[in-house]
Length: 148
Image (cartoon, rainbow, N blue to C red; front, side, top):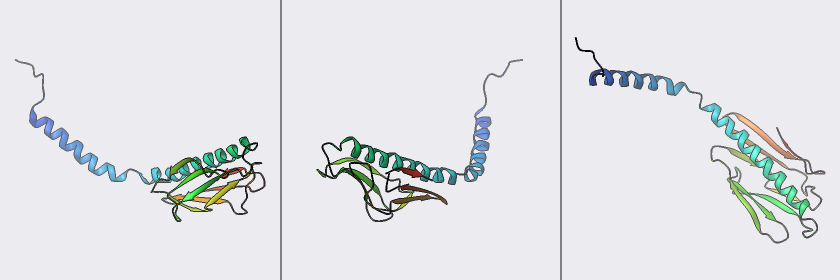
């Protein structure tokens, strides 16, 4: 008796069909909403890092730049991005986009003076996506950035 060493085409088609049915049933049950909620956290963390960078640039260049640096939100609320600029020369240092699935609202300008302090009284941004909300705020007197 000869031993079988391969699968028939019919057997392969049946296995692929079963896998297809399992995929159709399983994929809608995946919690993709968790990924969207995570996007708000990631966008807020990136913003907090760039606010700290803007403050650090203002302090590091205080000897040659007495006006400081600023982070300006671009587009209307909800914002689509932001840029970091030198307040003395108006040169744009960096420009970033915010993920379109994340809604960002709040303060439109963050101006850091040469001592690292913030010029505005109100300094807060809210990032939200799929029910998750993260707030990034800046303490005016010290320029400290908080992400909650």
